[in-house]
Amino acid sequence: MSGKSIVNAQLASSRSQHGGLAGNTLSDYWALTKPEVNFLILITTGVGFYLGCGNEARPFSFISLFNTLLGTLLVASGTGTLNQYIEREFDAQMRRTARRPAASGRLKPQVVLVFGIALAAGGSFYLAATVNGLASMLAVLTLLTYLFLYTPLKRKTPLCVLVGALPGAMPPLIGWAAASGRLNSESWTLCAILFLWQFPHFMAIAWMYREDYDRAGYLVLPKGKARIPLVTLETLLPLLTLVSISFVQFPTRHAAIFYSASALLGLGFLYFGLKFVLQPSRSAARRLLAASIVYLPLLFALDATLCYRAGM
Image (cartoon, rainbow, N blue to C red):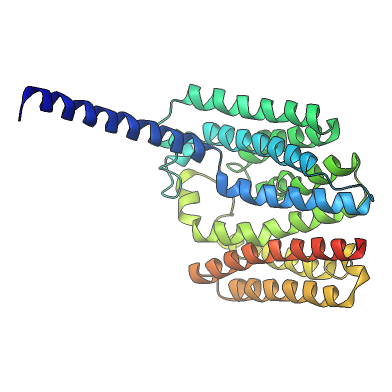
């Protein structure tokens, strides 16, 4: 091989390495934002926005929806990033989270902190400027309660799940506030549904990774004899309440078919919850988790469909 060929080969190799490093860095920043969580946040925010428009008899605006989703996404991404910054040392002790960019040390803590603050601040200002102050305030409140209440409580008490469900239930309120500029009883019904849904959803996750949580010092589940009773209570009570709420949701009061469909969804979700608490195993927890992921989008889709039909 000639000297020129060797030089060209080295240059090509260098470009490939730099390209790989750049790609890995972008992937790490993307992972910091917790995109799998943000997907659900965007869905529930969008449903809140759509139903808020219909309930308030306001014209639906794709531009307003885009601004709402973008601002909410930025705040949520900043929250996820800052959460990984705060918990990086604990995440490093869990198999499920040890490869996260902050926990593994692939990104420096200072970089993660600045990135998270920039996303959260940018998103809150964007919502205030393009949507309204109420939506921005709710997004900031979600961030503060998640980072400064739920996150530290995870290492102190199993009641952290109750506290963490509060910011987790806020996205529909953000969407509703963006659409109408105010909150009413129907918006709080959406919030209540998402609040209750989180308990069986998280109980399934907590059971599947309970050894990981114990190893890292998280108290999302109590130790000893209290563990099974708490898991049973926080799985079944919210599920039974969800089934009850399915009969009084504001969109479903207009058509019997939606009463039935909503109730059937709740009963199906309850079935997997019962199977889990009667025989708590990883496989049962995995099936409950899958049921929770199916239940929520379908329920909200039913609500949005009836709202559309009622407006026709």
